[in-house]
Amino acid sequence: MELGLTGKLLVAAPALAETFFERTVIYLCAHSEQDGAMGLIVNRRLSQPGLDDLFAQLGIEPSPPERRIGVCMGGPVEHARGFVLHSADWAGEGSLDVDGHTTLTASLDILREIAAGHGPRQAVMALGHAAWAPGQLEEEILRDSSWFIAPATDEIVFGTDHAKKWRQALVAIDFDPLLLSSSVGEA
Image 1: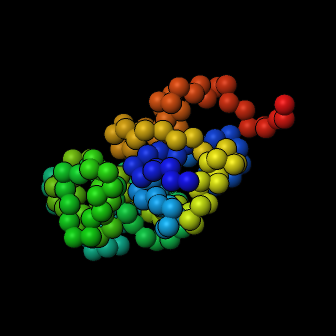
Image 2 (image 1 turned 60 degrees about the vertical axis):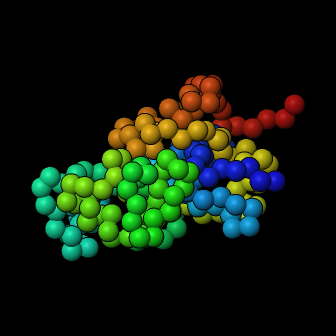
Image 3 (image 1 turned 90 degrees about the vertical axis):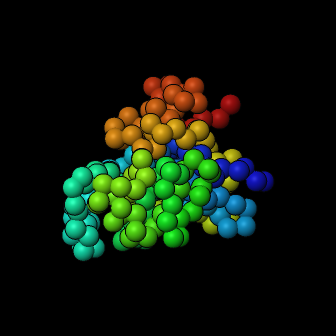
C-alpha cells in the first residue's frame, strides 16, 4: 500500500515510549514502496558538536555575516554523515528537491554558503538519519500504530524551539498530547 509520505512528518506515538524514537518528529525526505523511507529527526537538538565545531572539523572558515542554524540528531543511522534540510530557494550539486518547498543537501557547498552568510533562507543540519526497509514504515504505521502522520510546516521543520515541536505536530492533526496513553488495551 503506497502512502505517499515524502515531505510529511512522522510523529512518534505513545507506542514508542522508552525507545530511541520517543517523542520524535521526523521529516520524511524520501518514501517509496520499492526503496523504503529515509527521514531526519528535526526535534532533537545536539549541544555537541555545534555548528562552529563542525565548521572547524571540515576546514570551513566562517566569514561575516555568519548565519546560525541548528544541528540535530538526525537519526540512528550514519551518525557521522551530515545533511542539511532547507528551503527550496537554494540548490547546489547533489541537492534533492523533496517536495517543491523543501530540499535536502549533503554536500559541503551548502555549509560553505551558510558560513559566508548566504545559502537558503531556512535550514537545519542533521547528523545521521532514520531509515526503513521497503514495507517496514507502513507496517509500523498501520499495524503497530507507532507513528502519526502530520503535515510539515516551516515552524516545525525549521523552528528553533525543539522542545515544542512534538506537541505542535500533534496539535496540527487535532491530537491533544495530554489525552494520549502509552498503554494499549483490548476491547
